[in-house]
Amino acid sequence: MTNEKKYIKSKEAQEALDSIKKMEHAGLKRLLPTPWLSAILGILIGTQIALLGAEIRTYNTILIVLIVIMMIAIINKNRSAGVTERILLSKRTIIICLICIIPLYFIAIISGQYLNNHFEYYWAPFAIGAFVTISIWSLVVSAYRSYINRLNEEKN
Amino acid sequence: MKNSTFDAIIHAPNRLQICALLSPLEQVEFRVIRDELDVSDSVLSKHIKQLKDVGYIKQKISKVNGRERRWFHLTTKGRRAFEMHVEELKRIVSNLL
Image (cartoon, rainbow over all chains, first blue to last red; front, side):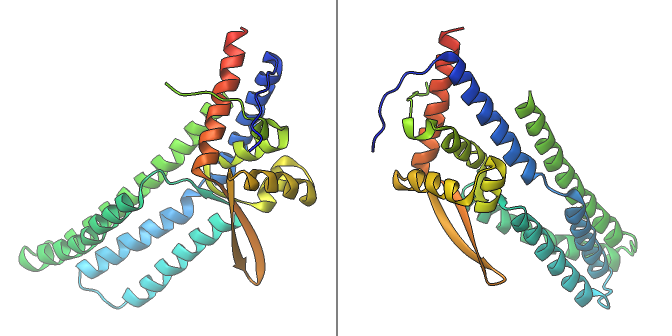
């Protein structure tokens, strides 16, 4: 490796730092997520939890198909942007998070069914579904805001 | 305390910009780097080859609709070298202020 020691002037160093900031900003700008696709995905998941909780299975297949279509749309949107996000979490942490999230999905459905059947709280599955949708929406908005804040920090 | 080392390979303007673009991201496609740097394919390929030769970046190829797409990412070695180079630039600027 030809990593020779070289001395440069302060002005050149400052210009290099400015160009680094500019490029980092450009990269992050391309990564800016669209909250709407994720929000629609949240609504679909919330609706599925609500309907399964209320034991209405008529629309289950179409909801699964729509969820898969939305997931593919989100992945394709990120790929077409030509950049992928740097995930700082380790693979193990991601697997642990997924292991925790999947049972939560079933717990939400089962609690809706339990409250509906045993206490006749017909509204309970829909309340749980709305809660899940709002939670996903909040997560998406907070991720979007954190990107905007990061972009503004880079700008300054 | 972070170490700072001037890296002549990274410091060349185009290569510095490539590393800066890759640093906050996981992977970046060839066309995106080319558009952001506003250089030709051949110029970019030359700089990428130099960074690849020293092990600072790696390439992954994916096929989308039969078309080959080249994605690049900073290696651990490259990320460390870039961070140390940025630290050195900051040190130069702060020392002479």
